[in-house]
Image (cartoon, rainbow, N blue to C red):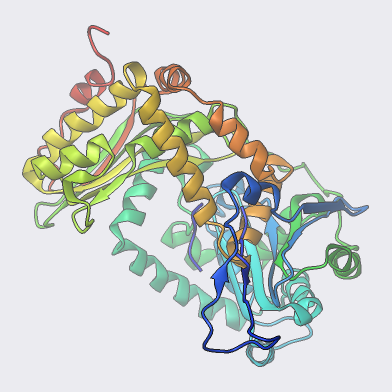
Length: 479
């Protein structure tokens, strides 16, 4: 049950099997019909159907007709809606969801899921909480009913709360060993300092030790409202049936707030740094980012293309110095790092666009120089052919991430919360195609050029340049 962090459709190529004299031989090799073109594939994606119930609860699904399905609840509530006192409640509540309801004990719930051959899971992010189930399409109603039960009728027993308190504290210790998770928490802490996005999803230790049943009940009653929940389905899911199940099991969800309606307060970005020097660590872990935009902002797609242009690289990559990424070639030829990956993390109204790298202590300065040179290249010199390559790679990555009912279901639920609709693939493809090198230069100049970055470093970071030097590398004296 990890955070997640961020992920249109599964296409099957149909093969015609020619039979001899009306019979089909098992040893006969299937011969493929003419493969569908990319454009044909886009328009043949099943329609995403959306229905809103009277209480504002939304149902969205894509029916691909396969015998299995994924169905889940995407809830517009995460750690960003918490304050300093109750930070960690959303994640704590996720843990409590499977610990028994008024109808089912924890053992009953686990046995029922196992006997169905199903899978039940959940995760919490900074802006969303998700509960989902994977099952046979014939068990769709049972899956929806179980999701309804755990969200609306969890007992939240005191004994279970105490047990999960220990589990979460151990999970926090395990997360501390995952330096990539740690560095991104520190990056958020410095970039969004003093705001809800600067807090961790798991919350501080003192909060985990003090969160009570009342805190969990209050969080549910405040945030689990009809208009803030999407029931998403993918795979073998009949939309009309799913709407009927939503009416049956979620039609009574409330819409009214007893007090003030919870809203997202703006989270200001602060160009700043945090360094945790530990020379006993073998490698330095460093992340650097500028403020980008929210999900629905028109500049988000150009920033995604720019992110794809920078790409990622690892010493284990077979391509070596022949990778397409200019930064990857420099990293290989100069032995500058063990790995790096560019990222574009989006929220409702803001985001972080940057890079995460793992370096030997003596190559940090050279790697930082090459990174900032690439960023300036994006702002000033990137060519149409390079942008076309990045656009094609972005399209490929988007389609590859949507292979199977679970990632499709996640895409449906997330887009419904982020955009209020699911963007059709032909529209997304056209919007990416419309991006030119000039668009990339303009957008990158707007968000990267001469901007104050946020920097986080852990390990032997003595050679990480002073923040003022890093800031000076965010522009060129002569364009």
